[in-house]
Amino acid sequence: MSPLTETIFFVFGLVALGYVSGWTGLLKTSIGDALTAFAVAIAVPMLLFRTLIEADFEGAAPLSLWASYFVAVAVAWACGQFISQKIFGRDGRAGVVGGVSAAFSNLVLLGLPLVQGVFGRPGLEVLSLIVAVHLPTMMATSIALFEWANRGSSESAGILAAILDFLKKLVSNPLIVGILAALIWRLTGFEMPSLGMRFVDALANAAGPLALFAMGLSLRRMGISGNVKAGLALSAVKLFVMPLVALGAVLVIGLPPLAAMVVVTAASLPAGVNPYLIATRFGTGQALASNVMTISTLVAAASSFLWLAVAQRLFG
Image: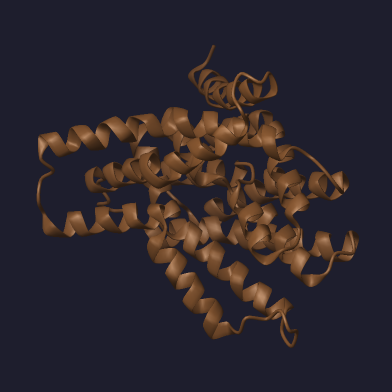
């Protein structure tokens, strides 16, 4: 078995174990929420903190990296919103949910362990640069588009209130806190004490397996409901259109091989839970976002392998 195949089986196998644990009743599916909360609030921020304080960013070109990835995001979002509104007849607000569902990769719970397993620490450092701006960009865009869709209605909170709410959530988000803490620590030039590093390592090392298992339990709870056709269409955009655009972008921009492979891999990932949380926050499209997350994750074991193989063939 090739290292790539083994990594894919291991990563998605942990997701499957979480799902089976919920399906058989071995664990209550509500435990998935608790495990996810711990992973997102403690373990993953520690992983990002460790990665960023130890990373060597000499020669890194984050603007080119971000441009390559977010071109793919923009195309997938536009396709998802068009499909939701024009083909399935949803309103503007649900169209925003469709757009974000088709463009919001699961970079944290699935992407970090997958990229670390395939590309090691150098790949994790590249992905961390995307993660650092991904959530703020996607959340800010979602809020702006929802406000545009609600313009003139009684449901509009107003752009100033939306911005203040966004900033409040941003500065209190554990992932952002972990990233900012790492950047501040790098600026001080201090060396991490050995005891402190042991605490960081203990929690960071648990992030990958815990996040993947928790994701499987959450998938069992969310399931598939409502308009499945829309979920299938948006999943196709997420898993095939977005990585294809990312592949074209990295070729045109001329990213270094490792960065190019990470961008294509990140774009090929299934939708995460954040589109569902966004849909819940704005009270529309929850079933749509849940369907895209579940369907795209089920298919991603095969599609991500395909895109990883293509990226390694072209750039490896």
